[in-house]
Length: 419
Image (cartoon, rainbow, N blue to C red; front, side, top):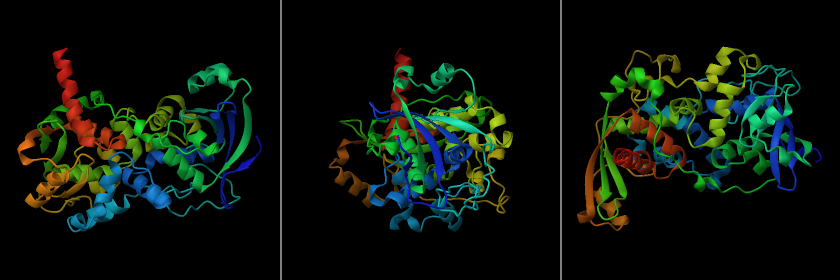
């Protein structure tokens, strides 16, 4: 395979050596330097809302929907909601910036200017400048060091039979390919193959959120979160048991919109690297289990990837179990800050679209769904830590986040009781 220039960008480029199976048009793995590794790992520091914003800015109308996060984020722009947010909350949620911008990355996918200048020695942000890595198509990553070839391929999940007749070649990534990679790791099982072979990937709908998460790491805080409940009144159709919408107070809506501020690495930590986004899970587990700190720029680099800082606007009203160490130190600390203004009721649909609740809007929603009021029943749910984390998990992949995060969890618990 000949050298392939993947981008028109001339100032800064990322080079990688890919090994492919031509017959199956499949990337087996790639050898990358620390500059590529840093950009890839930096995805873990991006807040969820920022990821949606980056993809919408780059792809426009063709931007992929990321579960229910896209509709949640776009709800901020609706005229119905724009005047309901406190000034600080609206500013943070609309920007959803990283706490640290890592301006010396070779590429900044979030639109910030990089301080790196073409031709200068790259010193690394998360990884040491002498380190190199092997990245598999599903984003498992290992240090590229001498050792057992078979053992390394096994750890990467590469079928040794597919290595027969494999060819290698150098590929150059520019900003376009880096954003394509960000998109691919969220919606495709083979992000590197899609870019290298320029395939159209539309497999996002096949990713299914599975109800249930582990709470073992939060056992010490269990009593606190057992007493910290949010009330949600769920309207469902009697005949089909389909969830129609939920009536929520400001605490639940604040919880939902605060998800847009949380970095991807924190989501991985909260869900025990079991998000149903396999590429992200693999990347996170690589940092946790496969890459020794000697290949990173110290323990702080590992911590900043596995538990990146959260914007401190969230610290005063945090429902999720984030320690004080997770929050950035802002000038507002010590003052009460909220994202949602006032005491109001809200309507939340299954895809996390949030609007002000009033009689006319609720009736209009039922009318649009062609559902009679006589076929509607109300169920009151208490949302604790387990339910909140299941909503987080479902929001990443499902456009029915309330159904998959709450109703399916309830059904799963019922099945366990019956068994």
